[in-house]
Length: 290
Length: 155
Image 1 (cartoon, rainbow over the protein chains, first blue to last red):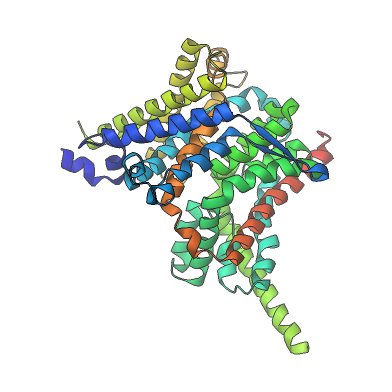
Image 2: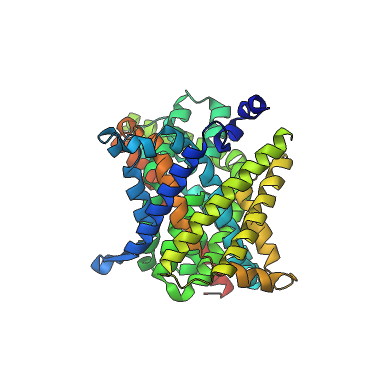
């Protein structure tokens, strides 16, 4: 029986058999201690004068502090750390994070439910703003081309390149194609810096004059951790609207989750290719004219 | 015991562990001012909904993440027309999204550890392009919503 179990990939990671209790214990105690510590540090506000405020929530501290414990960070220098946090704990953590995201999804749904009338009223905005996700390529593609990318640009700017996009681009072009390299690049940057980037962007965006409701809808871009960081930071920046902000962010994220893959396949990818052809041929024509 | 059952038991076990860590974080955030009984019951409800979401995702062929099912399910259960709205909101309100976020990002931090070496592979150009892409989707969505909400007279 235990052989059957370990043949399933998910199962062996979440299993506590064969001495894996230790891995569980290590990971959950480490996460508990660091999360608790981060909450004791609390929320910090950095004023940037007229540009606005940056709000650093405990979650950002928790993430930065705990990275230090991983084997490729301080673990390299302090070997004892590797007993608490090794590659086994990291793999388990990836799997467990998906489960904690479900807990968050449930909690966020419950902040949307009581506000259902407001959400229905804002329905047109919520649905139409999904097309705003195409902003990735309108802004990103020209800049990627200017920086010297070619077909890589299509992969890198087709979306925010989370796991479903890797699968999609991998299937259409293959992971070793230029498009595959591009999607992988944005994916890696998102992994390393995306959460912190959005946490800061959302609070700075308050001073652009765009209404917090609209910013809240923008926070639901289809990645759980990015949505968490941005919507919580936004709610902390505009506390008097925090209930609506969380409700709109949650609903927008549900929509992005539902339409994400299909939108990317049927709209975003064809459009990125059209834009690519438009920009590249225009650039070459210019080159000839000059 | 079949494989599917073992799998489910493992998911329940891991969810319960997550629940304990989140409740501890919540307790520390409130410096002990937590209605512990309600918070535990609230967490159990959340875990149950999360589990149902997982099972819906596992049994349907369409590619919609379990996260969306979890939100959708609890959204429906907490609308004013739901008979269980009162009790669910009463219990779930003890747990805040911010503290769940702290725990999520702590887990995210540990798994980033696996990818730390990627930093060396990234060129500065790639970092700039990715940031522009992130800004693009955020403001693309924000501007459209702002515009539509304005036309509707909501803001």
